[in-house]
Length: 207
Image (tube, rainbow, N blue to C red; front, side):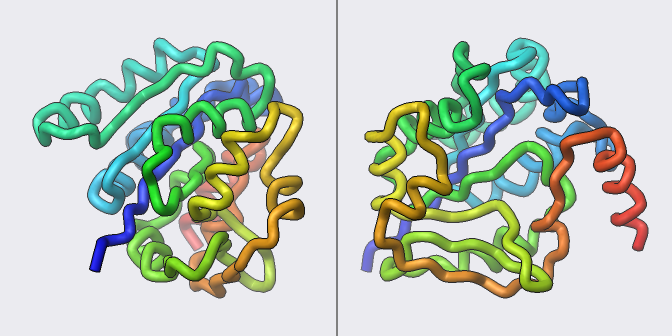
């Protein structure tokens, strides 16, 4: 039986306009958001693609230790791509990243503002993946959260869509087999858009 290929796509390209700071480089637990996330993605996914854009050179510098680690492994564990058109919006970054993951059976789509997800979350979410399902979304306290995992049907639809589309439109257009995973991780609801959100991240982690 062939192993299901689950890869990860981390979006770190946006300008973070409302918070006024490059979110990928915000500190959390004595490291940056992007480092914190990648440390947990690395052991759990076969391939990882990171899309950078705003302040790309600064973010790439933060990624150097992971690129060195990937080169020691001797495979294509980590790919970093720059979206020069990041101001067109998140969907443009998702499309660009997925072009590097065309052979994946499933893709975990991860945003940069969830550094607080524990590693066990990724282990358990991967266990929800089945070939009969197209879209897996975690739920906590009856609220939809992120990251999501989607399959080949969604991946191909995103790649064939224009930049005016988005994930909500694609989910509505396709007849998808959706699995809503009621999980135990409140961190799936984390969404850092403002400095208040960022400050709440620390108060929530102490609860």
